[in-house]
Length: 223
Image (cartoon, rainbow, N blue to C red; front, side, top):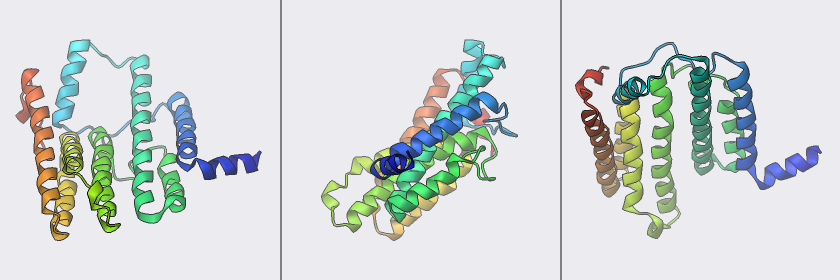
């Protein structure tokens, strides 16, 4: 039995990883009432959108809604685990990536690691990781002399994700700035331009969406 599991893991490392993560989160959602809770919730553009939706849908703090909230938290954390694995795969190889991804899988407060302490940061983190992963993949392609597979649209997509991450978690603007700075140092000026355009577009979209919902965006810009 153990040999079959080991063989399956060797053939399908990512699938095995996600199956473990799903089992852990199902247990947490059902048996850990505090799973997905945070000590605070920062005011951001996206939180403004959620506040409006709660009013429109008359959503209260029922047990069913709490269970749904924990389930959504679990789904977001699954996405984060997958992105962490993909980033590690690009940098340290599949075997080490699999082992490193076990850390967030078994962290019940995943993905805070003692740093992310509010819902805004938790929701913004996977978007930032996704954007970083897209850019890192382009760098790997360039390093391996596969420049023909590098597309400007990839940098725009990365920028869109980074911009949405900023809308969730304002402090992450420094992460986005750091990524742009690295691209500048590597003289990927087209990448800097496309990524910046994506960031601006996603922030502008969320801003306009709030205006259409009769929500003042300035109310939620609080650091």
